[in-house]
Image 1: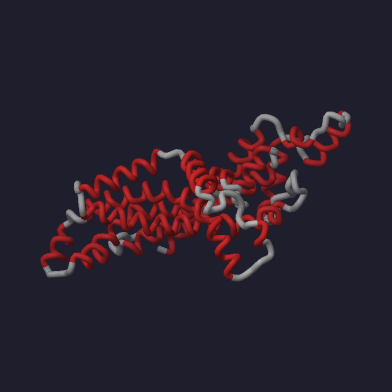
Image 2: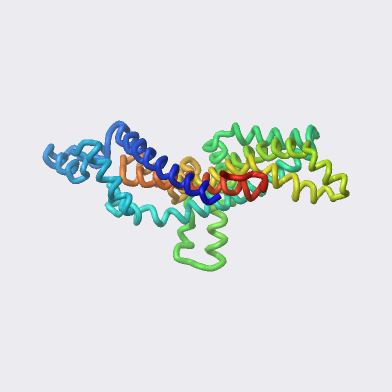
Amino acid sequence: MQRFIIRRLLQSVLLLFLLTVAFFLLVHAIPGGPEQAYFSPRQTAAQKHAIIVELGLDKPLPVQYVKWITAAMRGNFGRSYDSNLPVSVDIAPRIPNTILLFSVALGFALIMAVLLGVFSAVRQYSITDYIITVFAYFGISMPVFFFAEVLQVIFGVQLQILPVFGRTSPEIEGVTGFDAFVDLARHLLLPALVLSLLFIAAWSRYLRAGMLDVLKQDYIRTARAKGLSSRVVLFSHALRNALIPLITVVALAFGSIFGGAFVTESIFSWPGLGSRFIDALNGRDYPIMLALLMLASTGVIVFNLIADVLYGVADPRIRYS
């Protein structure tokens, strides 16, 4: 196991390096540039050139990349063109917001997916199974932005029982305690529900397929023949092995936390990393864009490694050489 982890870490470093090159080239290939967002028609050509020089955009791309990656390896991703703050200072307050949103959404999605997947597999081809299947296809095919706007109209406009924008209400700013917690929960409910819908739908189908395959195995029939209760057979024997295919997709979803939920955060004006990336994209804020892309990629790579290790925990038959 130790040799496997070391080998995967070395592969991850190489992959991350290749991603830095790809991201840097792609970001700089976007039409326009940061100067497009900050130039004023009243500025002279000399003033515009001074801005380009100040941003370091007058250098060849290889020179810009070497300068950026060298600084990034020291934890310095530069300064935001928009806020003029260090990138780490700019995005740091948004990280807890995105982690909170994803943690609630993915935690709820995982619980619901396990329950629905197991129940659907046990009741295969029943009316309940068909209902869960229809829900899964609905969740997979439903555009996130459409579902989000429907919930905003119903709960925010018509019923007016839930806020649809932001993280806190203006009157709660600076307030702590139970009232602040309730206000945060009310703002969090709709975006977390929207974000969890797709995960519930997809994960429940993965688990259903895994459970159906496991329930046909000989050791499950042996466990039942020994007189074990259905609950013990399902959750102690079948579920543990059926989780193996699900581990990868769940790990990748948790890895995407640091990329933020672009659509959901933008629609609900949730102050997270996803909405900040959209702002940076619109303003061609290269340092912010590159930092967030690298943060998201690192998260996916790390959680993918965690998934590989969890395979051996979920199924002791798996051994790494």
